[in-house]
Amino acid sequence: MLNPDHFIPPVELPRWRAWFFERLPLGQIAAFLSSKGVPRHKHSFWYYFGGMTLFFFCVQIVTGVLLSFYYQPTPEHAYESIRTIVNDIPHGWLIRSLHAWSAHLMVGMLFVHMFSVFLMKAYRKPRELMWLSGVALLLLVLGFGFTGYLLPWDTKAYFATLIGTEVPKSVPLLGAWGVSLVKGAEHVGEETLTRMYSLHVIVLPLIGCVVVAFHLLLNQFSGVSVPTGTAVSKKPIPFFPDFAYRDLIAWLAGMALLLALATLIPKELGDKADPMASAPSGIKPEWYFLPLYQTLRMVPATVFSIDGELIVNAAVGILMALWVMIPFMDRKSARGLKSPLFTGIGIMIIVYIAGSILAGYFT
Amino acid sequence: MSEGPKEIGDRRDFLKIAIGIWGTLCAAPVLGMIIQFITPVAAKRGVRESVLVGQMGDFAQGTVKIVRVNKDPVLLIHTAAGQFRALSARCTHLGCVVQYQESPVPHFGCNCHGSQFDMNGVNTSGPAPRPLPPYRVTLNGSSIYLTHA
Image (cartoon, rainbow over all chains, first blue to last red; front, side):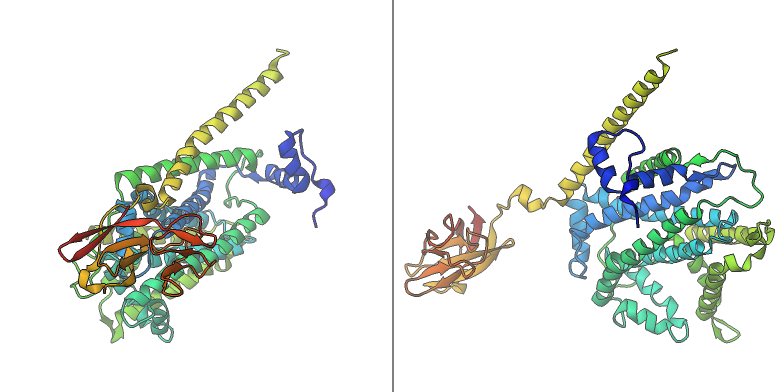
């Protein structure tokens, strides 16, 4: 338990601030944050991307709450409510565009953060739990992207969800059942829309906030990792206020980029989904699902009389399991040694993901 | 040089104030935008469009029906003399929807707190502070249009 006698302002403060310092352990928090140091070395730049991901997550929450004031999750009203938001509600087009673009930027920052953590071997002991919670956040973010995609109920959203919910069906035992849980019916329809909405605005945010809090708490316990074999300056950057201000600058740069994208390339709304109409040409998932999409395209329908989709799903499952287990497999970095094998694996994965995104986008 | 520390203090104070003003200038339009976004559009514009509520044959003489005008319930009264009149069905006390009641004399009553209005919408008893607001009735052939007066 915190001792109230320790609630002493570190310096003489204005009366209103002193009032809070006398009642809350703000002095202790301030002392902890100013004693916390961020290592200073040639790779310190990569530390900003976790904060940037968090920033775009916050933008998602604010804009998502605002959109939920008007959005109606039924096939009859979903599309019209989005059209009302875009055309009739003041700044509605901007709020929607900010929500869509900050989702892209959040996923982008998360990938940069994850691979920088991987290549700096920041997952090694004692930060295995940070890695595990980080992978959980990756899956949650992809879940946010998938469940949010259907909500505008336009043609592209409808058919992309139709395809996306068919792919995992080939997973033995749980595939068809899992898909039926998300779809709520045999075909994508109103049951799917309400389930996607519930997952997108209630279930995933609740789990997401808990996991984000856990991830950040672990960061406070373990501190910031230094890459193995990197020369570190003796004088670390104080987390507060120095690093926090630098983080703020990065967030402002992110905000500027987000505003530029949202205003110059506003999120479009296609035609209203018609389940009776033919699927339009050129339907593709969002860029962060393109590696899976491209892999599915490359694998034949059957390989040695085994279903091609099953092979891809099995491969993704195995790779994901291996990805989760990385901190426990990389024994060298756990001992503080360099592990070029894992660096090579990481670079190969980055090249494959980047290549398949480009191939999926341009073909 | 003896004034150095004070100069640093002054500079820090200036920077704090400048950052505070800059932050406020950045936050104010964002807050304004959010307030504009969440303010219901109809409340700002006011709804004045005429709404078709039915044909004359749908309303028998000497009856009262509740019809929907935009999102509001409206009492459409077809009097025994053959005239059409319309009043808001929202009680002027706390907004419950009133009911047509025939006895002891025809009137509109609110079940929430017992307010009563006569057939002209005038508040006659209970806590309702004002009469029921009237709607303008326009007949176009046999079609009946109502407009918020």
